[in-house]
Figure 1 (cartoon, rainbow, N blue to C red):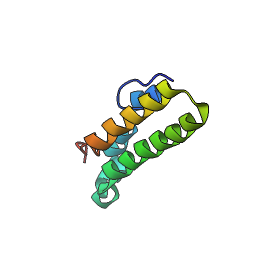
Figure 2: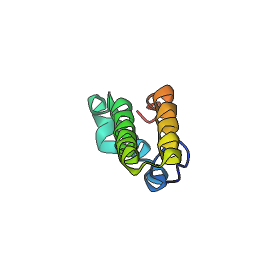
Figure 3: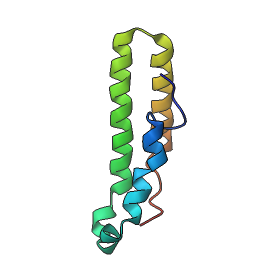
Length: 86
């Protein structure tokens, strides 16, 4: 497993789903739909990370377990991304 930056899937990071969501004109018209978008996105990142952590526990590959734990720590310390598009 190769972890690139603060994400587990570089392809998803390239799409940047949170920014796309925040720029959606339909959602921007109803700001209440975006109130907790950054927090929900953060939970999504954590869910993927914890899934990877569970998988790596079963593989017995310490370097992957360590890389996943370190990446999760970065995500937890960073917190939700700013909602700059809202």
